[in-house]
Image (tube, rainbow, N blue to C red; front, side):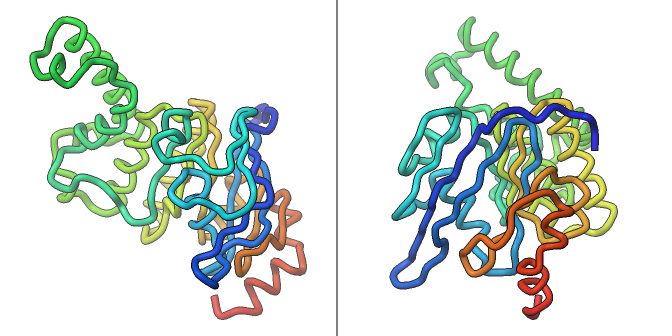
Length: 261
């Protein structure tokens, strides 16, 4: 780990409960995320990890509890509001535009930052053209950072899976989020692809100062790159602390070893 300075709480999740019909997805979950840290959410399949991210970024509306982001408290937020406040997100199942180039996919992540009207953009009028150049420069920096320069013009659907995941990360970074939610960024990757993605997550955290909230199944990855870990099982919180504290927590051990995961 680098000697980074972890700041105050930026995101505070309090007593979140979420049900679908009679099924409880989350029960009274509380944890916080500090500025500049990598915060992992782990747990067996069906533990409620993705549901938790969906509550944070406004996809689901919890029945109980609140989320505080930078001192503002919400019972729920809508996705557009979350994005405009500075919370970015990648998804477990890639939601990329397969027929569009790498460049255009990442450019789509800057939509919220574009001030010019569609009319001005279409006619490439002075301010719109200057703005587009500025956004393209930002996107080119991300492409360089993620080492995908060779694929700038390639349709994303033609890329191998590991590179598509990188483009997905690039699109989220294009929003310049203060907090980045990563939903299983390494799922389905081989060892080499995972090592690359680990490096990018650490660099995003280190060089951009972005706070990262990460769902990941690979325990080795989690223990290597996280500052703190929260553990869910059947929608309840069973552990929270440093990787070492969680690794030695009896409830966590039994959740992982006592089930067929």
